[in-house]
Amino acid sequence: MTAMAATQTTSGSALFPRYFGLSLCVPALALLAAFLGGGELRTALLYAIASSGIASMFAFPIMHLGLSKGTPGLLAGISGGMLIRMILVAAGLLSSGLKGGEALVFAFAFFLVYAGTQAVEIAYVFAVQRHNAARSQQQS
Image (cartoon, rainbow, N blue to C red; front, side):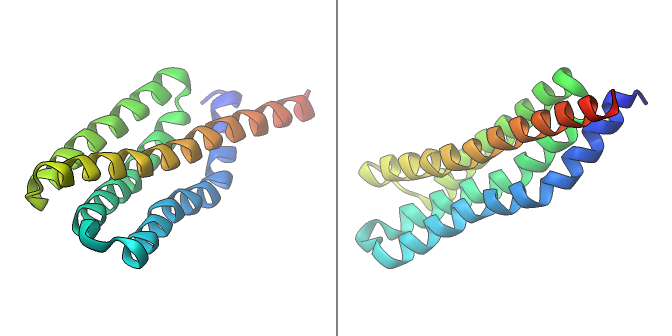
């Protein structure tokens, strides 16, 4: 294992719990909002938020594992996360039985939560890179 790979693994592991917890807060807050004000679209919102939250729960650790392998690993991790999200958006939509406008609400809510969790994942990648750069300067 190279020194850079060891540094990435260590720093990624140190930052992972904070960012993973923050990523889980996005769907949790969205679920709270759906329960408080969902009205007649509550079912569509709950299915969408649950599907997106579950997808994020699996996609973020996959990206974290790929990050320690450099750029190819990061791209593989992002691809794995996208595959999981694709499967869960389809599964959520099919299992909910929504049609028409409710299906559109489902899609909008799913991708709104997805955008929030994706922002956290991007922030995590940049934080790991900054942390790695600072550690490599200290070692020089």
